[in-house]
Amino acid sequence: MKSVLHNFLESYTSRYSDYHGFWIFGFVVGTMQQSTVDLIDTRSDLVAGTAPETLAVELAINKFREQMAKARLPLSAIREARLEIRKLPENRNGFVNGTECSGWDVLFKVEAAIDSGETYYREKSIFVAPHDARREHRSTRGT
Image (cartoon, rainbow, N blue to C red):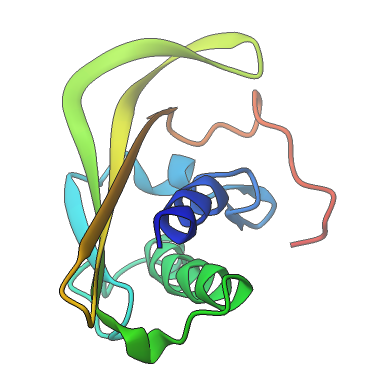
């Protein structure tokens, strides 16, 4: 389960989580504060809003399920799985494609409880700047 959570966070926060070819988190970071996604139950308290926000929820659920399948673990073995996404309050400068810009550190925490009663936890922090097509590279995957 540890590797499932690790691989999930790596996959979810990667460049492959995109919206129209651009990294999805740049579209949602401006309005984001703290959100929770239930990775098992598709009803989530994150969003009923914009397309990028809705897609971010769907991506989280799908990427978690992909990692469970790759590890050959049935979803039925999971009692609870939740992703918390929290934008840290301090705005700071960071780099996007070698260009300095303003943004935030965003903390991604995933927790899963399995039927045996054990709970597993992973977290990852990344710098996210608001979407700006002038400094970002569009994916060539044709999204």
